[in-house]
Length: 111
Image (tube, rainbow, N blue to C red; front, side):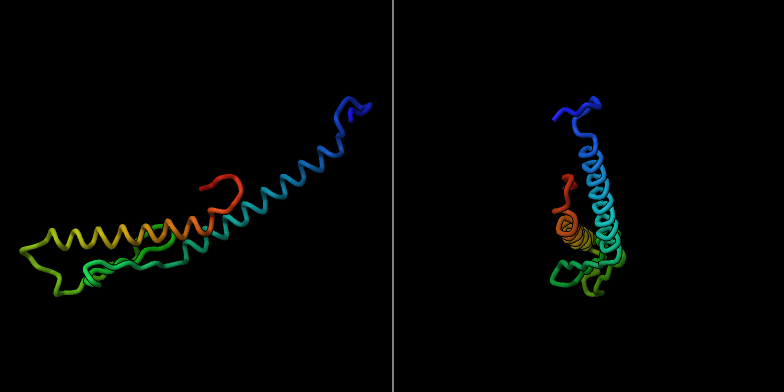
């Protein structure tokens, strides 16, 4: 096991380091691909039976909010606010689930 050059199989250590570097490069490539897919995926959630719809990218940027006119009641702004919050939170939950699906199995404990 111990070689005469004062180390423990130097060639094996170099091979191990190369393999680790290659694995790290592959992981970085997979992460970049997952990030790109998240950025280019749109998720949509609704609340109030479809009265409010929020679209969000997989990397959690809100891209669109649609509100049906019949839900707009000047005497009940709080309800509209609650519907927007509910739809936004549901869209974010979908984005988090997608991110875990894409990145969760990657080595290194990213999630």
